[in-house]
Amino acid sequence: MSLVCRVIPCLDVAAGRVVKGVNFQNLRDMGDPVELAHLYFTQGADELTFLDVTATVDERSTTYDVVRRTAEEVFIPLTVGGGVRSADDVARLLAVGADKTGVNSAAIARPALLDEIADRFGAQVLVLSLDVKRSDATASGFVVTTHGGRTETTLDALAWAREAIERGAGELLVNSIDADGTKQGFDLELVALMREISSVPVIASGGAGKASDFGPAITAGADAVLAASVFHSGQLTVGDVKAAMMADGIEVRA
Image (cartoon, rainbow, N blue to C red; front, side, top):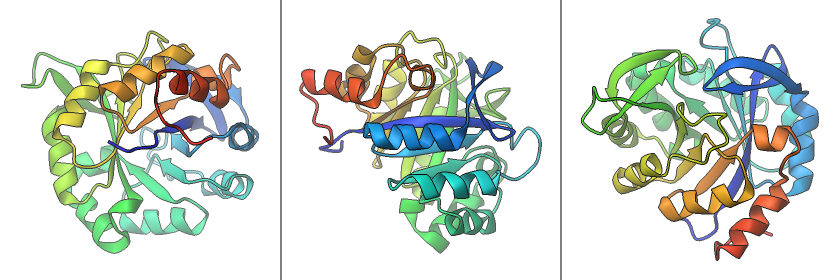
């Protein structure tokens, strides 16, 4: 586990606007991605994650212009995911300002994509984005989903994470579809299981509702915590989260 833990606001974007729902459904407008990115940068965010949540469903590319304008406003690492289907897509994202790329559905459809990205750009660029649901159909009790949580696969989440790491993924973004948007706290069991099998950093996502929710995710094994709606609504600032984490004895960047 990392010595210094990261706090990462997530910008879920559809049609050029930040959106948020519950369990990936009933998305509502939360604002302009560039304005929000700048706000979180000034609040002390360690990184930003930009996910085009309908790019795969709509079978189109991520909005490169929004990524470019966002990158011009922030000077911290920016991870971009959604609609990444090839190493050339990664090259284009890096060219407009992304530092890392998140891959989900396309890698499940063709796992060799992970090898191709890692071989060409290095593991530090490749983030495996896992949208995970609880399921009795897998040995671990967790199944991977695609298309923004809309489609269940037959993949055991832990087995797929292991394979992705072997293929070159440098980080796991683990999002609980069950907890997403509920504000009931992170799925700590899922985080702990991912920590057990992962040799790369784990980012916990899905379920944050109050400042005190973040520390337990780190204690469970996450290297970073990611949230969206609590930041977009103004309910919490990045500073609020870091203060709560420090109170729990967790080291964060000032």
